[in-house]
Amino acid sequence: MATPQQINNLQNSFQRAVNMGGSPGEVSTSPTQSFMSSIPRRVSLSKQTKALKPFSTGDIKILLLENVNQTAVEIFNGQGYQVEYHKASLPEEELIEKIKDVHAIGIRSKTRLSEKILKHAKNLVVVGCFCIGTNQVDLDYAAKMGVAVFNSPFSNSRSVAELVIAEIITLARQLGDRSIEMHTGTWNKVSKKCWEVRGKTLGIIGYGHIGSQLSVLAEAFGMHVLYYDVITIMALGTAKQVSTLDELLNKSDFVTCHVPATAETKNLLSAPQFAAMKDGSYVINASRGTVIDIPALVQAIKAGKIAGTALDVYPNEPAKNGAGAFSDELNSWNSELVSLPNVILTPHIGGSTEEAQSAIGIEVATGLTKYINEGCSVGSVNFPEVALRGLDLDQENVVRVLYTHHNVPGVLKTVNNILSNHNIEKQFSDSQGDIAYLMADISSVNQSDIKDIYDQLNATEYKISIRLLY
Ligand SMILES: NC(=O)c1ccc[n+]([C@@H]2O[C@H](COP(=O)([O-])OP(=O)(O)OC[C@H]3O[C@@H](n4cnc5c(N)ncnc54)[C@H](O)[C@@H]3O)[C@@H](O)[C@H]2O)c1
Ligand SMILES: O=C(O)[C@H](O)COP(=O)(O)O
Image 1 (cartoon, helix red, strand yellow):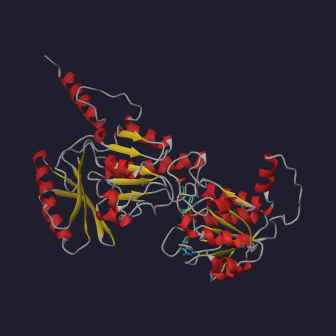
Image 2 (tube, protein in one colour):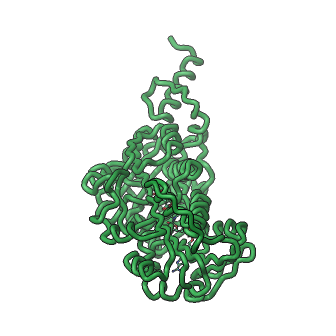
Image 3 (cartoon, protein in one colour):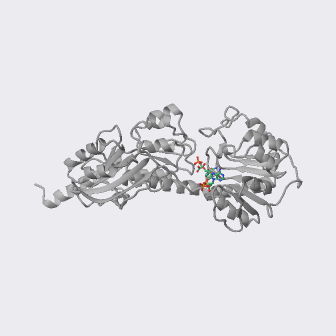
């Protein structure tokens, strides 16, 4: 017969196994045990079409594409999630198949998560963009499905700014051409139209995380900085904000784009803008491929108006690394562009440094984990940002309710009526456009009450998605 101490040990072992997603009787000795103790004992992920079925963190399925950094994989593995990892992005049909049953997907800038793809994602709870840009995801549709999207807003900003500094000097000194010539055995020692950057004017379009960081670095090289932005932003150093794009174009020796891909920034620099630039000036784009009209740029270089360009991003980028991927089939202007002098082409590597990728992996994986395990949406780009203090796991009969709903009158009254048989320990709700998100911790909940709470919330007309953590 077991002693009370043995029974106690057995119970503890059962609880730890549930925490780790293992079977009762298994005791995990994972070093992440103490971190794990801050997460819910069981996580019930209940989407629109899913029945209430509690499961452990070990049931969470994560699909990671595009060579997301290992720091993220380690965080997810530490949680006991099931991680499927791919180095490249997936063709559309394969992505549709894979996305059907995952709870989270991690992507970078290549994978398009359009409505067509997202509507197959029946269990999806959260998307992680392991990069800055989120234009590849249909953010509104995701929010309407109750799917929060996270990104890393500035972890690779410095890497991009440093790349642009390198490109400014490379263009000014025609380094790309000299290097290609030497690789093919030609010694071509020239100084004609090769310049110092000291005293030249850098025009930055978009003075956000990258543009402003670049401004500081450029001034350290003795450059004058002008910037144009749709909002008024405090100048760093002695940089000056100009009120029109034309003014920036007229006065700059180097023009560099650091704006997001939006309808307004499509072909922001096209033939009229190149015509407005100084003769012999340079164009740099490490933002998004849609921002520059490349055929118009080719014409401006051919006409001698633009003395060189550095492009890191393109309207159509290949899904994976390899020869021939940057082809005429994808970008019809390619052959003309590569034949022009002083043209630097890089394969979207602005944010591709060890430092940036490692930091992004940690930041986004941590955001996703907090959303999956605790419901915390702080940092999401398409969802109201809501957080509650951690769940008190020592307290029995506590349930965290996560309720995403349409932002219409009467919801709180209905929801609180459903929760009113229990003690609402804490509650917070916020909205963003048509979507609202409510978090509530309720106590005095018996196991038998949980299904009832779920069913009642599920029957509400405003519901988008429900999760109960307990
Ligand atoms: N090449 C790469 O690897 C790489 C890496 C990181 C980011 N990016 C891209 O760089 C871009 C900028 O990133 P960020 O982090 O600096 O973004 P950010 O949001 O911090 O800054 C963007 C700035 O652009 C301004 N802006 C928006 N529309 C504008 C317009 N029509 N005209 C002028 N200004 C406008 C905004 O007000 C904002 O200040 C994004 O497209 C991002 O995806 C590329
Ligand atoms: O949006 C970004 O952060 C950059 O464009 C980098 O994207 P990547 O992670 O696909 O290189």
